[in-house]
Image 1 (cartoon, one colour):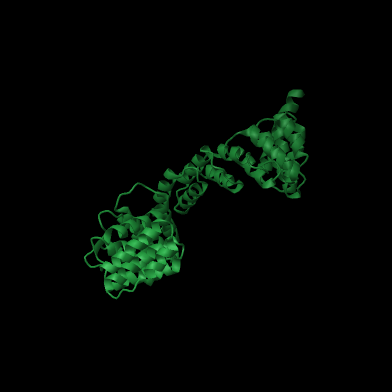
Image 2: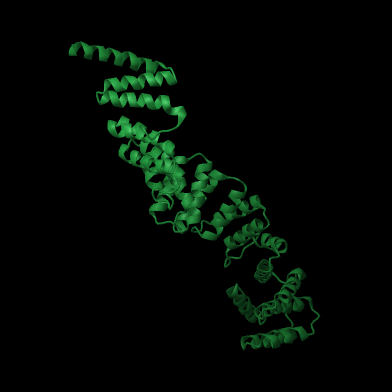
Length: 391
């Protein structure tokens, strides 16, 4: 903005000597005011122009334009706006001079957050852009104004015009585009926009997390896992909630071992019973039996009902004596039939057939089942064979 004002000021100082329309009196006042301004005497320059008694329409418009410049340099925004509005609405300024004056007015209205008043001027400016001006900047500002006014589609339309200039990607226009896309719930088109932002700011966690969120919204769970995993690899500081999401995504994409490993990184990994049981479940799904047993054992310290999970895995892994010890700790009444059957299996494997048969009958008495009956029949036959051999 400062460069813009300086350029306008230089244009003003050069143009009065060649402007056929400007009267000699007005030209003298303009030169005097400009000299004062260059010597940092802005208040005197303003007073010189205000005191000028001109009647010709062009003289008034030209001096009003200069006044707008000096007021702005003197940090008097409202008088600057008033003077520039007067110069623009006069219709006396022509071609590039008129264009740059209108642009300055539009920019100052934007600075003053008068979006509704600035917008028509920008739309007028884009109709004919001088060769030495940047049309893409105008479309960006139009897009920003529509965004501030919550006019999301018009904002996207303006950014589409901006992108026709094929500028290198920059954060500001892409942020406006992304914000409008999100407001309009255009999830899929927003994904490539975020990826372009990530190429510019790969260290910004917000872009990564928004990308993951959009990929989840659009059902791209594998892509979401890749994005969140890559963010972690690149050193993005993930919250506890983000890490839990990463673990869930690993599990949902068939990588339970990585899910368990991620859960181990959480602050409450060994004190939060839900985290412990989730981790144990993931280790079990990954068939990492030793890890699963130790994690279920940890869970059992917080809640005795998990002794059952430990006992089952010990039995499964052939650790029958340890399984029997663990089964003694299972106290839930509704599990006693299952506990008896588990004892049956462990005792059978340890060749304690009589004790195994007792447990099978106990299971059947608590809750009759084909499994219990099968064990009773099988073990009874084994005992007969054993007795016959003994006799």
